[in-house]
Amino acid sequence: MALHITGALVGVFFDDGVYLALARSLAGGHGYRLLYLPGQPAAVHYPFLYPLFLAALWKLAPAFPAGVALFKAANAALLGLFAALLVLYLRRSLGGRAWAWAALVAGSATAVPLVIIGTMLLSEPLFLVLLVAACWVADLAREAETRRRALLLALGAGAVASAAALTRSIGVVVAIAVPLSLALARRPRAALAAAAGAVLCLAPWLLWVARHQGDVDPVLLANYGTYTGLAAQAGWASLSPANLADLARPLGAVALAPVHGWLRFYLGVPALFVLAAGFVPLLLGAPALGWSLLGYLAVIAVWPVRPDRFLWAVWPLLAVVFALGVGRVWRWVSALAPALARLGRWCVAAAAAVVVVGFGFYQVRGFRRGDATSLQDGMSATFAAVLPWVRQSTPPSAVIAGDDEALWWLYTGRLAVPCYLWRYDGRAEVSLGADSLRAWLLRSGATDVVLTGSAPVAAGTVNRLLGEDPGFLRVVRIWPGAAVALAVARPASGVSGPAAPPGRSPARE
Image 1 (cartoon, helix red, strand yellow):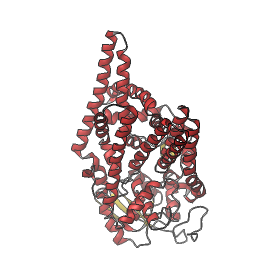
Image 2: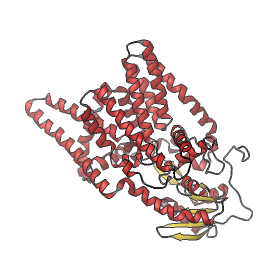
Image 3: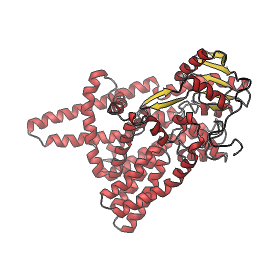
């Protein structure tokens, strides 16, 4: 993993920049606020635990960007810790040989998508560590011999599960699965203790979010609003049977990489059947983990966001479930009549071989092409060409409208706002249009618009704005590689200066 840590800029994947910007705010004593946005709204979209972890590292290495190497190394170490904990947990809960679990986890934890996550400042590695820890403590509570020990362990399991939710919002499924697993094991008092532990830890954060959710400008809801606001924006149209196909698409892209079209479908159906069968032994042997993973998949099946990154994060867990499914289905078919059992075992072996070979092909191709680092390095190169111009040609008071806005603030010190405004309509992402963009640029005090190769969707709206209002934006610089800077012409009697978020006074801070 450490071999794939590069000097890529932080912020090219958007969330990584936001996490580090929040860490910088916390380390500097400015509270949990998005300092790069005008008005410095509260960060109600992002749970605080991972930025708090980065803030502690920032205190150890305050020089930026020199300290980024330490932050990335810590993330890679967290992913290694997760793999080690998972092997020990599986050995304890499901039995089997330690070396077999270690080989399975090591092979799946080095999947190219997970390497990408592990070598960037994203919250998944910390979330995975807390997920396994919460499930382990919950299983200890389920097996405890005394009521007092069970209650104490359950309370701790609920607290650790809430920490998973305070790292990634989808971790709320862990806070639900832990008491559920105890309730199904007929440990009602322990289940109540686990639920109480989770609620007590989550309540302050939820109350803080409810208090500050109005800080965010309504046009930024898709990127910075609360999850309840996002769900309301997407509406019931986000629920569709097509979601299941969208859920299977990233799995097929990794596990069945060499095949495409109808062949991927026909090979994928039996593989999905084996995967589904694997949840039976998982729920029996490690119920907290099983229910957590089922809840996780259920949420991303109905959530309007593309599921790719969510599935990448739990790839080792899915590999474990698939391996359990192979064993489960093998035993099922072996109980049939001899001829059918022989045919069934061949089918199970073929399904397993297809997935193993497909994943192996994906891995070899990915590492040969440098997929683990190429995307972030390529995007970093584009930004690196533009950042010197921003630092040298714009005043410190400038407000840059661009994609990956946290990156502009981290590396130039300029305030930054999005240059593309959009909303969810079901599972589709819809632009708010050129008129909304013009109003936003004026209201936010934007002085320059910078489009890079990472902002292709923004280019369409900006082009429409150029056509509808020719004098509003003026091209001032073009770089090779489709990067362009435009100056915003502010009306003589128009809005000037960054606007405060609704319901807040600029002088409040």
